[in-house]
Length: 149
Image 1 (tube, rainbow, N blue to C red):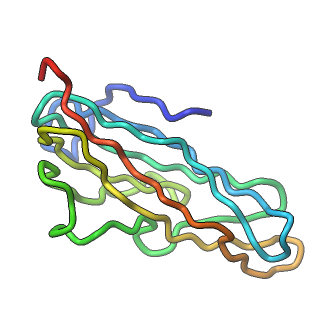
Image 2: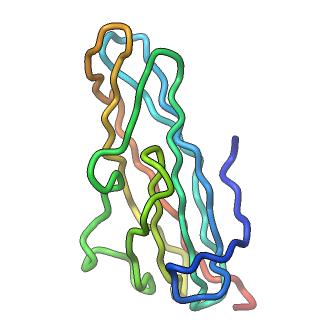
């Protein structure tokens, strides 16, 4: 299922109707023992300067795997390493253990990206062993200003 963008009022953000990006993170087993792979579609936050955004990641595990976020679940660079024009970035309370939410304001003047990574605990339900991630993951949220914004 591709990431979708929809309008939704969220009272934890200082805007009447921030844009919401919903992203499913699929966790699956690999051919290598004790390893897993995760997949999430590319995310884009394109809007006028000052637009408010919420990214909502939801975990989905394949058969015989259990997955949950550790700690905040999303690893972000330090604020000093954020792209120019990304403001008010903060985690919002999740709706469930399988979900994490991040809010920010997009004031970029040119194309840029927010780099992030996941902090997950993946358990093989058959062997009761914890699995490790098997590939380099370079996820980003593309942040751009709409030409008319």
